[in-house]
Image 1: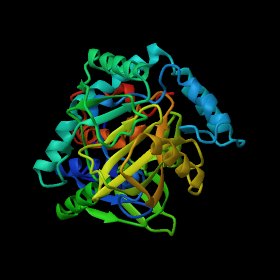
Image 2 (image 1 turned 45 degrees about the vertical axis):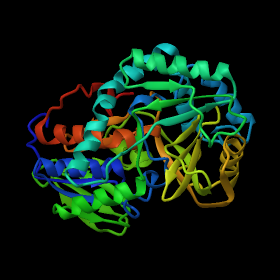
Image 3 (image 1 turned 30 degrees about the vertical axis):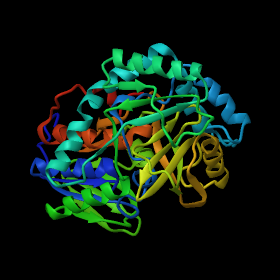
Length: 414
């Protein structure tokens, strides 16, 4: 740790998703006592209902060149892949203005380059957790990508080639016949060397490992605030009902709600909840790996003997109720493109807020207090980048240094 603050003996991690639990597990690797607190059940947030992608080769910022077109659609099409509900929300509109400034080719490339050190180490972190018995193995599988036209396929191939030229692990093959794609899909390819997990099961296993190694996990423990005494007494975390936990340091890993606690400690990076939706359906044609529909922004992943269908990006309020129209739009986008799905069986409807930063980079590092840290803002890539971010932050907290430069992820950046 920087300054005169000694490495901590104990840390409270606020947030029981894959990011928070990975941080806690790696802190234990350094011999640090950990307590994980969460306002709900462990893994009940964005770590539960997402598509479970482990795709380091496909990690890119949401603010892509030409993305303003999706913003226009979001305002005028109720079924658009990106949704911006019309309401008076100055903070959201300020965020979207900053977000739109990153929709240039130059900024997109710089963001991808900044993410490279995380991407390059992502699978190693998953492998380490599995080798230690902390979590299941990543299921290796290709991603089958479907397009409505050869032109759309060529555009996506050019995108993959650009990523490969920037050092991302991308290999793909053309010409596969994929039985789950309908006649609407005129061209397809397979991205090799990727994988997926059952995200809910993964997080539950990781939480069990943290507990088995002596960690404490407090569920349904809503946080009221965090206070640094500025003395040897450490940092206190107070629950909404008055309970208090004290440790030498605290990590904020609460996903899209990080600003609620982090602003008091200098968090400046604009961050908004970009909500994703998912549901489960039965499938007559079992998937051997995920299906991805880029134009529709929908993914179908093998899940618990069925298929999880996930998609959309909705910039709504953090605690807004599930919008059934968004579920309908995901299903409507996927139905013409795939076959063998029994849509009448859809169930397990879910919405979860993904923490989106305006510049596409996570917040990873110390806040104004050298005892308080943030780990979040991964957008759609919390699963694939969660374990490696946890490993890096744990190293920073325990040893004061990391194998990569974390400056691009500074939570104090504007």
